[in-house]
Length: 558
Image (cartoon, rainbow, N blue to C red):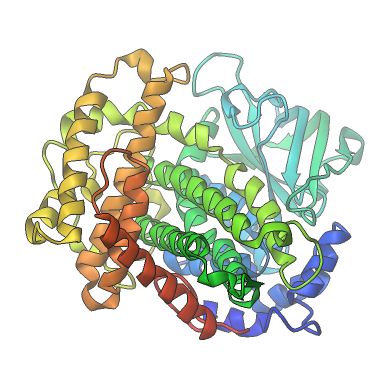
């Protein structure tokens, strides 16, 4: 099954008779329910098989394929995407990473039979600070005793099993927590208590639950990995989920841009269409550029899971951090085009307000942007001293989107210091290969110079500047690193892809990223206007031809 086949099953979103069209999805959202017809459709598609490695009977072999299928679903409804299956990926990847063969077979059997696995990590008192999670598991002669609470967990009541993160030692440090794979039916009913559902403003159909454990026995064989490895397993697993998610959220942005372009073309103002106004055209062009930037950056990171897994300790959090920022900013920009229509909960453009509400919590849930920056900070001085000066470039295949990949092997993902940064290492070569008097050449040289300045500043960071208590200036360096990484990925994709990616779109995409760096513009005002005109024309053409706004430009229903 492919993303194209899923699109065909989802059908025309504007058909009111479509059980998974916008009208039906908005009605389910108003009821704060998951769309039942949508879930039945995804069961027929066997969506859970996307989350199970092929060696255990599923379809998971390539990270980019997984992301493409999920993007297709999230483009239609992020709530259905998270609530039906993506939450099971967040949980099960820990099993594929550290589980025994028996645990992996157990998880695969649950998912392939249509069941769900919840990721029971979150506690309201600690949020994403898992190192201070209080829910505890005390060792007994024949297993463990769970005591404490887990809250705001997707699908907890509906799940057949959960991956639970619990404290197993009172000692300080990273070895104080462990993970457990437990099924609901093996927990004594009198030792667990379901907490009331947590209502939310976004993802309203997703069931967010909680559990209170009171001396709840858990079998010894429920432990994932060894005692104290909970954080390490999570960090390795996050390298997959933090990489897939940035590619997935291109889907909701695509739908939002489609609604905004349609509104701008239809809305009559001052004797013409709203799309005739320079401001509106600029906003739509820049949103198109943002979408292409996120698509290219996330695509390179997904390929790195296969080709450069040793670098995922920085690439994955960098992608999660920056792409969520870009997408949220783009939604706010598009809101200014739709005006009051961006808030209405009925009518042709009502899906925009649902997408905007749904994408906001999705960009910080699981792992927040601040947590991603904290992960990056300790790596920056080491990269600045060892990797960036060497300028060792990644193999061009990293930027060859759609090219062959070896099977995904989660065993190659390790926490800790990456030996290199081949994406930024490619900047020097691209700059040397690109005529300096072209916009692409000027951008390449600007980015190469920016990397030199960043390297000097990161090399000067002290140990206290790379912790959670770091000053804001250190966090700003982490932010700049993510922008440079994204821009280098975009340059690499266009440089390697040749005619597959329209050259006229590249200056506008890089201009958007470089604006985040500050400093003098690379493009002249006339060049920027021309670049934005190309982006606007592309967005309108793809809207009229019912094609995606991403790099694939694939035809879609509706």
